[in-house]
Image 1 (cartoon, helix red, strand yellow):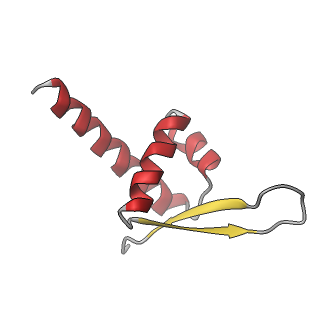
Image 2 (cartoon, rainbow, N blue to C red):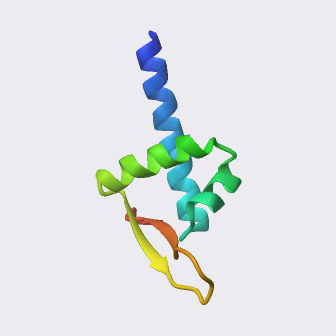
Image 3 (tube, helix red, strand yellow):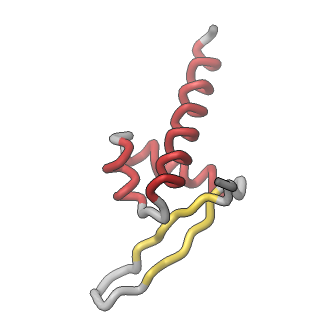
Amino acid sequence: MNYHQRVQNRIKMWRIFILETIDNNGPITRSELCKHTNLPRTTIYDQLKRMLDDGTLTTFTRKTKERGRPSVYYTTKRKK
């Protein structure tokens, strides 16, 4: 197995791990996802972006009474 194949396999494993974590704990924010998975923040962000682009995930926001940006929550489109 060459380097490129190993990298692609690792990305697939991260993606599956992230999707299972969202399914089991979602809807979930990016920071909560980082805490649940112990994956680096940039890995989470990159994979979430890819999954949003290919339609695997959806997002929504919840407004709070606090100041600042509303939290963005991620959910899967997979059937349980």
